[in-house]
Structures are given as structure tokens and as C-alpha cells.
Length: 399
Image (cartoon, rainbow, N blue to C red; front, side):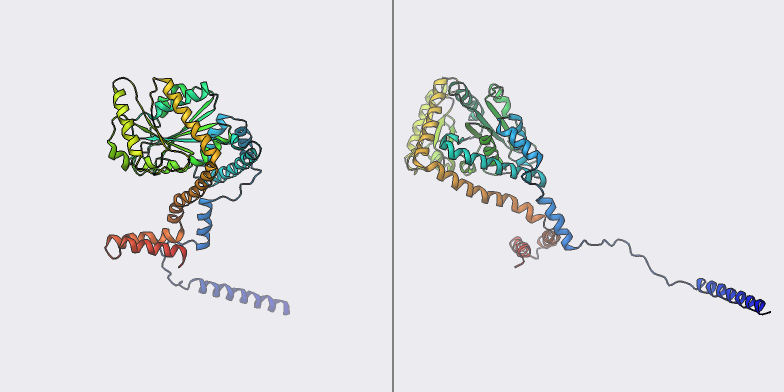
């Protein structure tokens, strides 16, 4: 009896529980509207971490296998390794840039040891060649390179800069077609690079390319710039000697005085001194000699020369080459070479800061969020561009 009564009670309890659960489940749930179109914002610390990874890579060390392999091949004089190394230092990829910086540090350490042993003989002669478009820079460099390699036993590196189109962003890189003989010379190396929007007739990474050429064992590097005007003189800050090519009867004496790049030049060469242009070349030489009297020389130990030359006359090219090495010996003995290079390294440090600060600044999380708002306020006339720039700078630095 007791057992039956207990079973009856348990059945009633389970039935009541099932009834209660059904009652609860049948109770209508409160309505919660769904929200669409809302994007979750990433925490600012995560944004800064991503921002840092885009620009820098601190994981590259001295033992990096790619860097070690490239360094050994470069120091043995491999032209393929030199081309790969220049591509590495010109890259904007954070890992490749870090590898390039590590490679440059290793090359500089090696060159410093060579300088302690051999002095100035271990240094590469850096010659910048500039001039207006059509003056014959590429043709003259090929003739000069032939003189240096065939008659003077030098290894020559040529770094040419081609202008980049403002419309398409592309570059023709056609200088190699005008240096066909030199490009086949085993003692010469030619590298073409676009300006990529850089001013001053040179491109980003060209200074590092010069250091790599020195590490690869080249005796002289010739830097050919794009056709420049009166104010583009950046090439003079990366070379030991600045050579300006002039076209016969190209501008009068007053135009020569106004040329800013002329004040930075150590040697002026009137090209195309042959045929019908020979008389005009003599007249142009006389005009520029007169114009130089009103300019203060850049160095106390050297007064700029004005010479005439023609690629058809090998003797005139040889005379220009002799003047180049006369300048090299003069500044080497006076100590101006070392002082000039030290000043150039400091200038290029700040040039790199200027080049990098814009890309780093624009992509910073705070600026990327603030810039569209300020642009809209400028378009609506609420603020001036100067005030907007000041706002972004103060936001960036937190002042």
C-alpha cells in the first residue's frame, strides 16, 4: 500500500512539472529589435599595432639567411647580387626594408675596415652628371665609361634616373638603349630607377645604392639625373663632384648666372663640340667662363672649369676624365672629401625623415580618422587649410 501511494504521488508530481514547463514555454518572449549597419570599432591599441607592422619590422637580425647570402655575393662583386640589393633597399615592404637596412649596416662596417687599411684608395669616386634634357647626358656617359674601363682600368657603376609620369605613374627607363656598348661591358654596371615623384632630379634610395656599389668593389659611380632646371640641386648632396653638361648656344650669359645648379657644379662641359656646332661651343664656353667670375667657388681649393667635349673625339673625353681625377686628388689631399661626405650623410638623414614622415603621418590611426572631417570642413569653408594642418599636427603629437 505504501509503495502504491508513493508511485501515485511521483506520477502526479511529474505530470504537474510537465504542465508547468508547457505553461512557461507558451509564455510569449519579449521582442528585441535587430540592429543592422553598425560596425564595431577596433580598440586603438590594436590599430597602433597594425600601423606599426605596416611600416616597420623588428624581427630581422644579423643572422638573417637572405641578408647573409646577399652580403657574401655582393662583397664578391656579383652584379646580380648588386641588382638584388638595390631592389631591396628601394622597397617599401617593411620586412624587405629591414633586410636592406641590415645589409647596408654590414656593408658600412666592411667599408670602414677597408678605409682603416687602405685609406682613400678604398673609397668610391662619386660623380653626379646633370644637364637640361637633350644635352647628351647618356651618350656622354657611355663615352666616359668606355674611357674609364678600357684606358684606365676602372670598374664603373652608372645609376640613371628617369622621370615618372604624373598621369600614369609609369616611367620609360630608356637610358639603357643609349648605352648599349657600356651595358655589355663586364666592367660596368647600369641601373635605371624612376623618380617616383621625388624632386631634385634624384630618387629615393639612390644614396643607399651608391653605398652598395662601393661594397661591390666599383671604383667610380656616375649618377645621371633627369633633366633639371635652376633649383633642382639634390644630386650635389650625394656626390663628390658635380659635373654640369651644357648645350652649345643654350642660353645667354645672364641665364648662366641665374642657374642655381651652376653654383653647385665643379666642372662644366659644353657638349657636341664638333661639326657646325664647334664655333657655337667655343662661344658658349667663353660666356660661361665669364659668368663664373661672378660666382663664389664652392671649395677654396678648386675653381670650376669650363671645358668642351664631343663623343666623336675620344681625346676630348679623355681630357674631361683627367679633370675628374684631378679634382678627386685635390679634395682628397685637402681633407675636403671626408668633411663633405660627413655633411652629406647628415643631410640625407633629414631627407629620409622628410620622405618618410608623410606616409607615416597620413596612415596614423588618429590622422586617418580626423583627416576626412577636416577635408569636409575645408570644402564647406568653415576652416582654412593652414588651421586644418595645425590641428592634425597637434593631434599627432598630442600637444
